[in-house]
Image 1: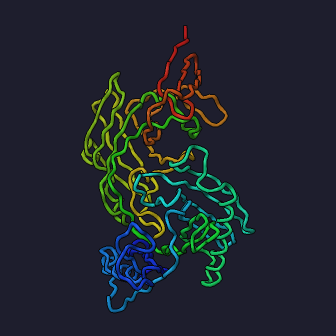
Image 2 (image 1 turned 30 degrees about the vertical axis):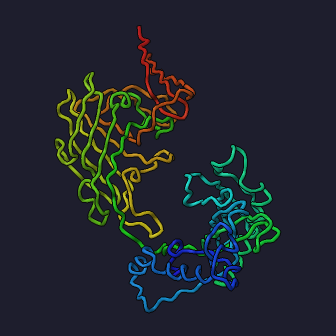
Image 3 (image 1 turned 120 degrees about the horizontal axis):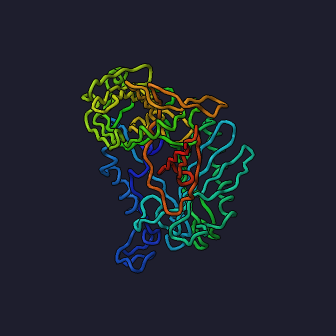
Length: 444
C-alpha cells in the first residue's frame, strides 16, 4: 500500500521526527533535549505512534476503499532514519528518471533553495528545473529549463555544473541497481534528493544525498480506452500562412471569405457511433459579405439545409447561407477524430485536439470548403506557375485557433502579389499572420 508496480502511495501517510535524546532521558519532563524551545519531550516512539496513526488518514482510507482493499489484509511497516534538519538543508528536490532499453535516460531535476517545498510551497515560489539527456555511456550535460523564482536571473540553486553532474551519477547508479534487481530495462523512477551543509548525522561532511526512490507505474500501452469530448468554446479564423498547399492558394478566396468563428461542441464519449451525428453545438460566424459583416449564431444542426456525414475518423457538416446575394454552401470537415486512444494517452479532449496538422504547425486546423451558385473570381495556379485569373464555383480554406493580437514589438513584414495589373500588398507581424491588406488597381 506504499509503492508497487501498480500503485503509488506518495502523500497518503505522514512522517514525523523524534528526538533520540528525549527517548533516552529518564525524566519525562521537558524541555526537549533536541529543541530547548519545545516544552515537552518528542520521543522516537511518539513519532512512530503518529506515523502508524496516519494509516487512517482520510486520503489513505479512501484510496484503500477505492481499490477495494480489505483492512485485515494490510499491514504497515516503518522506515526509521536520521532526519535532515531544515536548518542545514541547502537545497532539496525531486528527480524523474526515464530509463530506455538502449541504456540512455532522461533526467529532470526540480530543485529549490533550502527546505522550501518544490511541490506545495507556502510562498507560491517556482522551483528550478534542469534536464539532462544521458547517453548509454552515462554522459550528459545539464541544461537549465527554468530558473528558481527565489534567485536572481542567471543563478542556480546548486553549484553548476559540479553538483548537477554528481547528482546525475548518483541517480544513474540507483537506476542501474533498480534495473539489476527487477530485471527491467525500461521504467520511470521518482527520486527525492537533498544537499546538506556539514553538521548533520546523515552526512557529517555535508553534500548530496538521494533520500528515496520509487517507480512510477505506467499504464499498459496495449490497452485502449474511449476518449471523451468536453465542450470548450474555441475561436477560429482563416489560416493565412505563407506555406499553404500550392494548388489551393487563392488570395481572392481569403479576402472574400474573411471570417471569425466561435465553435462549441457537445460533451460526449467518442465511441464507435459518436460520429454519426454532428459534434458541434452552437456556431457563431462573423463573415464579410455583400459589403457588410454578416453574423450568424445558431446550433449547427438547425442551420439552413444542414446536413452531416462521416467517413472513418472524419466528419463533415454542411449548411447554406441563402440570404446572401450569392448563395454559399459551407462544408466544415473535422478530421482525425479519435474513437479510441491508448491507455497512456489523455482521454479527455477538447475541440483544439481535433483536426489535422495540415501545414506542419503545432495547432490543429479544420478544413472549410465553400461552394457558390454563381462563379466567383479565382486565382488558379499550380506548382511552378505564377497563376492565372479565372472563375470558380468552389474554394478550399482552413481554419485555425485564433491567436493573441499583434504586439507593439512585432517586426512588420511586407509581401507583394501582382496579377494582371492588380497588386496586393499584405502587411503582417513576423511570425504572426496577415492583419490588414491594401489592394491597388494599377490598370489604366
